[in-house]
Image (tube, rainbow, N blue to C red; front, side, top):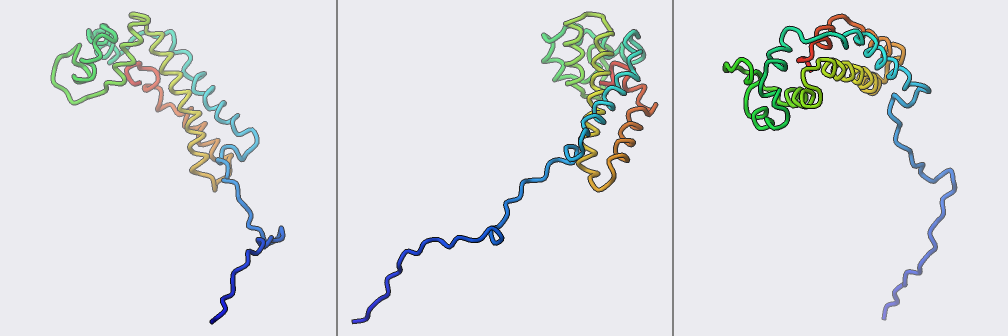
Length: 177
């Protein structure tokens, strides 16, 4: 008969600290690696708000009339939500076939009209806050994408974007939401 060797249970071999594999923590997002990086996002948001604060006293202009003030679908508030999502953008004012479909913007306009009828202040405030949020979000996004570049360059790019005059029409006209 052949004798088999039975495997004895051996205690696990303990590795020295030098041999143990290190567990790496996932890298924190680029915007968190710089102390005080949140300040740039806050400055971008405040800059966006301050630059267009003066539009709060403005009324409706240009396409705001056909999109909001003279649009019976928007003036009906949320009870017209079905029409907002099934018809084209200017359905309630021009009633001509078009190719624009912007139900989320019309829904926001309907909510604004329902909360404060015929008050352009609310629409301008929402636009300014949305633009300020865009500045903060732009900083966070660009810091993650442009991680190989110095943070100063990214900060300058974000601040220049926020201050660029090409955005004036978009922020000043309520319908541009």
